[in-house]
Image 1 (cartoon, rainbow, N blue to C red):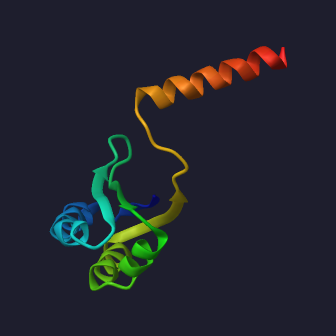
Image 2: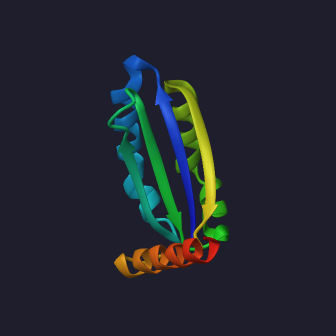
Length: 116
């Protein structure tokens, strides 16, 4: 799985407009081939800041998304309505629930015991 995150700080008087524009794009993006999820999240501590997170089955699906009209609109809105934005792409190595968390905690505990 490939994930990208855009963290956008909008101009103070443009936050609602940006979120409204993004909400209109989300359903179309979610329907794109290979999209596992796409969300808009408002930062609870930083005014005028939100994150868009896209999850893709493959790198190829994500790259195809980058060529779509919806992605161009997204980037255009970030340029016009935003002050700053960062873009991060990451490959997920493993996913899971509580079992994965317990496994990682147990592994970390073993490393600490061996290090001491």
